[in-house]
Image (cartoon, rainbow, N blue to C red; front, side):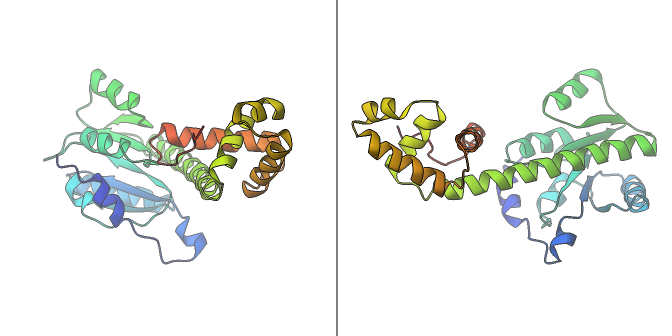
Length: 235
């Protein structure tokens, strides 16, 4: 399968609707069976959930998708790239939407593989409507939480970018629990200067306490662990 995840991500569009409308969940259905796609869209409609359907992973990847919370419902075996292939590509994206597999060809190893890769559920056709709707609700809830966390991290990254190299060093040392005199000794500066940098870091990071500062550092560190490009460790 060609590596097309990143171009597709760039084609995602900002929903031009109102803020409230742009936060309406959107379920993305990928299944090569037209009857299944229509049935799933009718089910989503009956539950008041917006949805869009695609006949293949390629059709999905070539489409522009509104930036809204939601989840995927993927068939496993389809012509071309499978649902598992798509899941692997989605896993390479940061903040990828949660995945629900719906298949008539499931087996235990396949289920284990999908769940280990982070799938919400692995359901076998035919599936009870309520079972699927419960899985969709769980997927949407997870995505809403992921999006909220991502917004917080982005704010931290933007604020972090305003720090000077020395302030970043002090930020790191404070977050690691170092005392002002220890930081001063390690950096070869006075304790008064450390206090000044520390005050600037608190103000620029909009932290009201050392606890908030530590949580901001941990959020930045987690982003780095997921492949973020922010250079947080300058010391």
